[in-house]
Image (cartoon, rainbow over all chains, first blue to last red; front, side):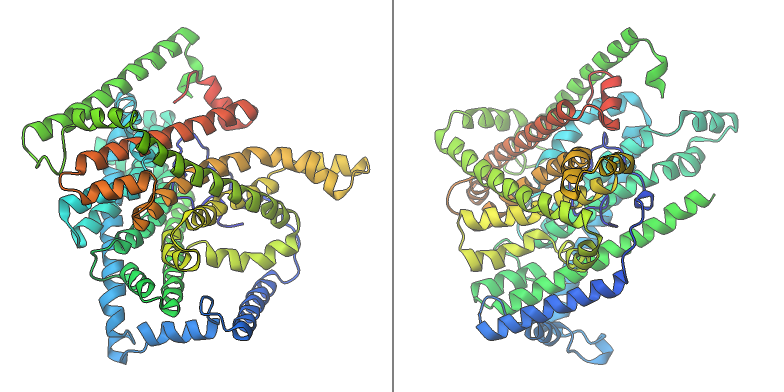
Length: 288
Length: 276
């Protein structure tokens, strides 16, 4: 299964855990038309849901076609020059994504820079490790109230919450990856008289890249969780999470489901995007 | 590996040095937080001195209401995690051993997984109200995925030779599963449970903070956050949450090492001496 090591597991940043071998090593099992079967089952499941929901007329589980239509009406019914986005989409989806991107990028940059600094020296690693382990062990939502006090409600609070939660997996994984640079290669770099920057760019970072991406995957799912969480708090003014709470207070189940579908699709696209970047970078690295 | 060339005493010395350095790091972090606050670099209501936070955290250890809250949170955490195990392990065994089911279920699994679990809080609250059921359901939902994926993955890593041997001796499908595949998968399942334990804690705290009333660690944090100058209490709660996370993780890692000492990562850790 492709997602095995990628996992929806925001916390699997344990540096002690070896990366399991590539799923390609699994012995292949012959399956008749796997792709076809997969889609067939999905269509079947949605169909059953549709039929049951229509038959029962439950408010809590609206039929999928109504949810899909609602998603379209809410967000993708706009004019063509706005890329078909409605004003609600511009007001809610874009701020959410913007905050997430800002928080995730901040966490990525800070995590990699600090991780390299910590991982380069055995002493620095030993010095920081307990504090980092503690920081990672704190469930991130617990810290959000602190950011609410410091920044009050709004975008800075949300970006800070996302960045502060997402930074630890990247940092810890980068440090572990940098620490495990092949000593033989470091010797070669010394023989070639590479300076620090060159050594970092040509040797240390590339060899730490698989670990860094393992951290980034966790950070991405944490960013998404914190994006939603920080918007669910009472006091926010816009965002997908805000749409969710607002629909919840109105008991508007259709909008709740629509927002969930939207978040699921966004999460899928973001994960797939990160995997594509990883494949490109690490694939090239292996080819060299 | 550098660790292999060194003699045992050198390694022990190095381990002790790392221990002291780690302790120094903790003290430094503590000192910086304390100094930043005392020197007035940030407002005291933003970052109270670390000593006050720690004192408050210790004080809370004697507060029976707070301890009851921790108990409520831990109970929901344990229930949700147990439920997730009860669902994910059999399902993972099924998906991993019957390729047809695996191929069929994969589309649904791949669609459900990327949904940030916190987003389900409003829906589940509408369905089940804002009680323990909601919390347990959400924890279970979020914790299912790491266990499920690790189980399926572990099954794929089981030694085919062992399975073929059992089959050659006339053992049936179920016997092969129980005698060869399940023991080979167990370390993977345990690692999945460890990951899920952290996820479950996140969901427990998140649900409680959002629901805002009742009992629990998250509720303590949420209410402290609303009070004026409540940051000290919030941070004391955060310290407790972090310690809980560390203890849970530590116990599970210890358990894994005891139960599955043959897996490569634990052998490695054992060889390096007293680990992390």
